[in-house]
Amino acid sequence: MSRAFVFIILFAVALLPLSPLCTAQQAAQRSTPQTTAAAKNEALIDALVSYPFGEVYSDDISMTNSITYAGKKVDDNNGVVPVPAVKAIGDLGSPAILLLISHLNDQRPTQAQYRQQRVPLAYLALDLLLHLTDMNDERVVVPGCEQHGLGDCMQPDFYFSPDASDPNVFTSVQKDWFEENKRQPINFVYPSWWRSDGPNPERIVRPQAPKP
Image (tube, rainbow, N blue to C red; front, side):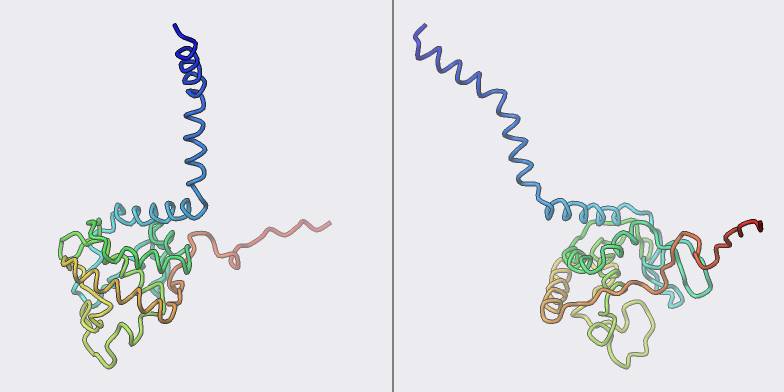
């Protein structure tokens, strides 16, 4: 066996233990805080897909027609403790806006229903944008409209129905939301009807210290 051949074998063997280490180091370099945060946010979106909302959307005008009202009712003013999948999106604050806009073309079927049909994730994203931002004004709602059905008073540039299925409609509405946010950043608004699941600290009766 020639010395050159022996040298090649020894060199190759010496590199073998380094290969997994190099791969791990490269993966660590690619995993930045930004990519980690993005992955966590996408996991929150995935949770919306699988949550069993049921028949949320209806033509009945007495219904709230929003997943932001899904949860435990706690008072007579529509106050609710929001379901974890929705609250987690709200807890993101302003970063939730671009995250939701990016999913306005997401056609994955969810467990939310309208007319006994599964609603696409795109509509859940739209629902949250309408209820977690300041966009629920004349930009989205037709001024002076007196109709009360689901979607009756919505501007078509910023809205599609829960049973929409045309990808071109999703893409067009998504584009308008992106452009509006670029023209004037959309403000995040935390829902006033959301309540905490814990006790109200103002109502906690603390035991008094015994008198000496």
